[in-house]
Amino acid sequence: MAGYSDRVRRGSRARAAEEPGVKVDARSERWREHRKKVRSEIVDAAFRAIDRLGPEVSLREIAEEAGTAKPKIYRHFTDKSDLFQAIGQRMRDMLWAAIFPSINISTDAARTVVFRAVEQYVRLVDEHPNVVRFLMQGRFAEQSESAMRALNEGRDITLGIAEMFNNELSDMELDNAAFELAGFATFGAAASATDWWLGAEQDSPRRLPSEKFVDYLTTIMVGSINGTCEVLGIKIDPDVPLHEGVKRREQVA
Image 1 (tube, rainbow, N blue to C red):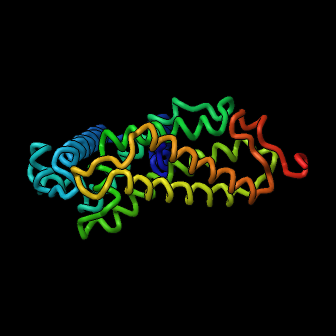
Image 2: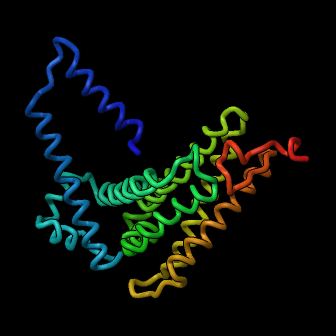
Image 3: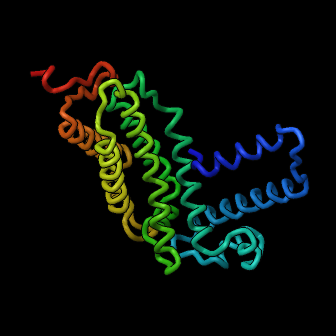
């Protein structure tokens, strides 16, 4: 899910390329693409280093994994927080790429949408537990702010799904703030549950089998949806598609 500023920059470059008399500096464009490629490779290396060495990995160890020196990292990232935020954005993008093809908000039941999203989320957490710990625990002093930014990147996923629900029910003219509140509350519950499930240490055993954790987390999130519906004055049948299963409470009574 690209950010608004990214879309604006891409649109500006595209317009510049199309408008007569506007020249794009080829060398600058090549340098920009090179920097983008190197940044991506460093984030890849950071993922590998954190996966292997744990959430207390040092910048030197990340540089060694990338086959470069620490000063070179600072040529492509303004500071440690910039790198940590890029790691959070990568995790968000990986999660969104996994979730989006697996759901159809128009035809899937609400419970199915939540289950598939949670299933992909738990799979990714299980594949990269140390990266998740790294992002959630913020053990470096420089990470305190970037850890919050990383959590905000993850929150974008739940807010995106909440927006999908809201758009699907747009003809009911529901309160968008209630959906945002549900998104924040649901994400907070999922983050706390994930921290509990993984345990604090690298060798901590999972507190539940992943399949059971998916089932429990799905139930908690469906409960959050039901609570939001209560606030909005609607009733939802979570086992049928949204456009069939949502009714105002006065219609149900």
